[in-house]
Length: 190
Image (cartoon, rainbow, N blue to C red; front, side):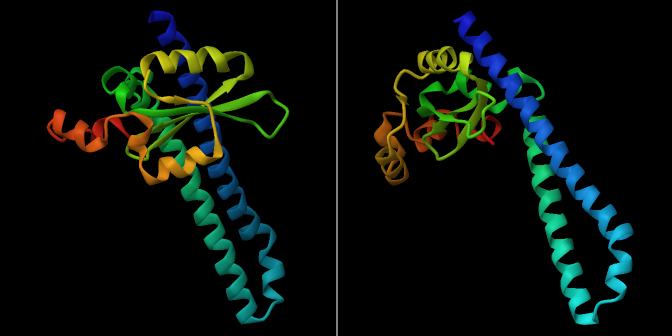
């Protein structure tokens, strides 16, 4: 089990780095866009009609706000993983492994040989762990030892089954977990 925890911690650390990098990138993009609009587009906007200028500014402001919100959301998720042993997934593995119903991989679309290991829960929550190709199989095996009732692999028809009733996958439904813990599961999930 100690080796399993090492593999899981390694993937959690990698995921934390990806979340921080992604969050900071989106925030930087939003700030850069503000700079471009304020200093580079101001002369161009002066030559446009008032209606078109307002429409363009509204579009840019909305795009910046959406990008900024997305960046902050990703960064906050990364902060939840700051202390790996207190992260939601690590806590879940230690205290509620029976709540994990499905573990599968998603290959990366780029050529960096990185992929995502997905961990889906009985209440519909989903976690993604970013791993290198070499770490994929040991991570999936380690996760499956913690959650032996979880379904491994991916079949398109399983998505429909999962959406209809996650308890089909063999896990204890979230209502049963809430009963057994006195209703306090909020600290363990996103």
